[in-house]
Image (tube, rainbow, N blue to C red):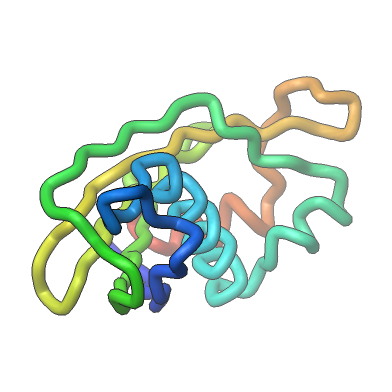
Length: 134
């Protein structure tokens, strides 16, 4: 399975009163990594939108193992775990050095400009299939 690693530094605004990354910030980290994944694979999300498509989040799972704190340098490892005709599932692992902090998944459905479910466009489907998704 192919993956893309994206470095992220924890900003002060993402921490709670205990100095730990607020749980909701991780959803933003996943979004950043997903966008960088697509960019590195040759189809930036902006181009997908310009083609008339959107990948709408239809589900999210996040499992927390260890905390991150202000100024930690994290790596968000992103891959594709499933591809269907109208949707895709991204899988993530957030690491600090070699320690797993978080694992997660986001499921997406492809919509057209009329907000109707539609098949993944060929350029996107080709990229995802080439990355070893089932």
